[in-house]
Length: 231
Length: 231
Figure: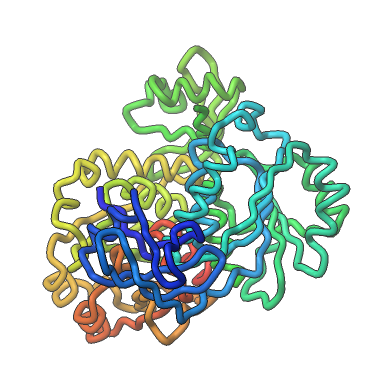
């Protein structure tokens, strides 16, 4: 199966000289597959440009561009099923989301919290795939919150400060707004949705429940559709 | 791994009496997992309602609702990689898309056309998963078109008639429109995009190239985001 690497992401430890990077493994294979002598590169949390292949696995790097702008959205997501976790993180990253909280909710199964997919390494790998996909370099910050109530009551107000605070809720009477020109904090529930008490907790701190129509969507579809709607 | 079945889809052959259906296999397992004595049901291409479990694998069915409205969008999609094919079809179906053309393009690898994922059975299975997800009953029509030029030159004008005809193209200068109140025919290219000649062919028959921003998204993310933007 061919995997397209739209951007070769470089890390400080790849550099053997200020403009020369040495790469191995999957990035080297991806370059070999592209079969070109120049590839798009970006430095982790830095600039973008072109890498010219000057020797096997060696790139002469010229950085003259910025990564695409971030999406002005903080995503608070009930921890998804391990099976969809990877796609959700890579997809959210590819859309430019830079801050993600994975939280507990009544309908999140306890076992999900034991999945290897929520290890730092696994999440980091998915973030990197999302950055490569979208030719971005700026790593999102993904944080886990194992307890719903303390997160919502003690922390979420500050996170959502100065932003449009929305919770996606299929039953909500008001529609998800369009083309907003401000920061958004978007809360997305688990499969099966938030329970009424959770929606009430969120509304108490200023979140508005909004709907995207009568259809129940998978979390990765819902997040992408909501982002498309909002911005 | 738990799979949530939001709707149990019933087929004519399941009915052993006008309001009584007998189910087996994955649907029966899903009902057992839900552990409730009533489940949401829908009849393929028909109405929705409640199925009361009256015996193991037997439902007394009351149909009193309609499926959610379809999305007024025809999707013309360059055949995706087999690996993402399932997600794309199930995702598009869950959003309510009822007509999908899978077409060839310069950057579609020939081998994709030999994948078992494009068999009628495989596509039908993914459509059913998408319907169950979104509590819909109306099966989409998915058609394959192995040759780009004859499809675009001889067929696509008629398909797109009376609709807003758009081709998603990351390089386009005009932005994807928002909140359109009309039928849309949306063409989405392969990974790596359409080549200039393909965009020109589409523009010649009245399609407008529109962009969703500088980020290159995976096809399933792009389709969901574009749907969110358009409607």
